[in-house]
Every structure is written in structure tokens, then in C-alpha cells.
Length: 72
Picture 1 (cartoon, helix red, strand yellow):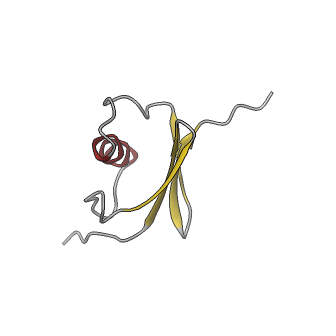
Picture 2: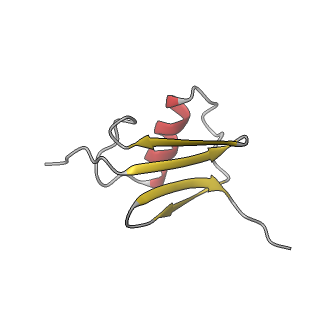
């Protein structure tokens, strides 16, 4: 049986930084990167491919969704 997790999801886009929970996004454990992106764009009413270039980093405390960092 899949349970809803209450893990924190930190989202950064357009200069914004938002803290959400998996429960707020109706995500089950475990959620794939694609499911996380889809839930976030739906939550913020963004175009479906809006977060395609964002990286998803999983830590023991949170999931971080952020733009890819380019170092040069």
C-alpha cells in the first residue's frame, strides 16, 4: 500500500523560493521526478514543460527542485 509522504519539497523558479509538502502536492511515496515536476506545475498553474530544465535533488530531509547550475 502506498502512503502519502509528508516530505518537504523546496522549489525554486523565476526568482521564487517555495516550501511545499508532498501531501500538499498529492504525491505518493516514492514519487518519480516526472511526477514531482507534474505536481508542481499543476500546483502553480504553469505550462506542462516549465520545469523540464530543473534538477531534482533528493536529500534525507527534503527534495529540492531548482534550475540547473552552470559553472563557468
